[in-house]
Image (cartoon, rainbow, N blue to C red; front, side, top):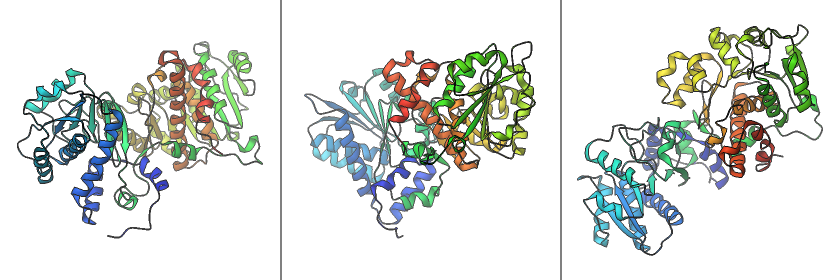
Length: 522
């Protein structure tokens, strides 16, 4: 096996975005070993990086005691090398290996640890005297539930509330779905090795992962691409990928080249939804923002967003938009975002909007109408991309046949995209955005976004970015992933300054531009 010319550190930005399954990670490592990389050498390199990170997290202090849980496989071997390195640097270390048989390399490291005089104990209760625990029981690839003595060990450690650093993944989590296999360790830190594992981006695993960090040990990009391809099916949104998807205006541009987005939102019952959607679109940089609202909301929008082109619409007796004006030409717009605060009475509007010859984003009551009218299958006939942005409840109404698969969000969102022909953004702690070929996952967010109106802001922001994006599947997918990232960054920045309780949806809109200023584009 030969490799291309020397990689540079700048190449690692692509590697950082790749997310793999257990089978993919195993295949990549097999390529390394087949090419001549000694397993023992790789273990030394990886464990050395882990030991350095643990020393940074938990500096050596008087009486610092580290307990190390040793599994039977190479995850246990990594843990033993870490234990050795910490021992040699002055840490007090206690080993606990609850397995009678280990892989040959792990067994060799165990013998050497004994030769060095590193103490071990057959009683896991002795670990309670340690200040921090290293979880090296199981790494990626676990598929069977933890049972018996191992399950008892894990459950007991969880009651101690001690810092736990897990190597690659907390023991007991499924690598791909993040599902808890019987029981699982609750880590304080998880050090994800080489490539991001899918479990690190699944909502169901978040209560076990703690703070997740990526440790790059220089897997060759050629080997990664040989297994996952140049466009992997699972990608993690990074600063680099998000910023790259935002159009950078040229100096000679004008408003008609910066995108014209139409927002269809609001009702007398939910007037604020229209305003929040408009404020999100304002921040996107779209050249022109038009917003169709019930006529009674026109003054509200004009007063708050004076630059918007407000289109007053006839209302029904509930205060919802009865229909769009007959002279409204949907061909004028580069993108349409429809749904926030629309109310259930505006289904006629939805049917009109679905015929629009431009990319269309549906949220909130746009999604509810789509489900009630059973129009999901009709999306395939649209000539331009359709984007659906459901929360889990809306997702279940749109795709009831997928309800029992919701525990694996990354798989289910891609299946929904394949079934509908739409790009689907599934909201949650880790927003997942899927086409029929790829899933992008936003890796960072905050509970501060779990507030009414936050989704309306995202709809406006995404619609505005969409209006500036080429109407093809790949650019649209990246644009929507960027909107999710930007929205989350604003939430994180606002929470850092105002606490999670202090971030209402209107406040969130005020942090969109400051959040982007932290990562400026040209």
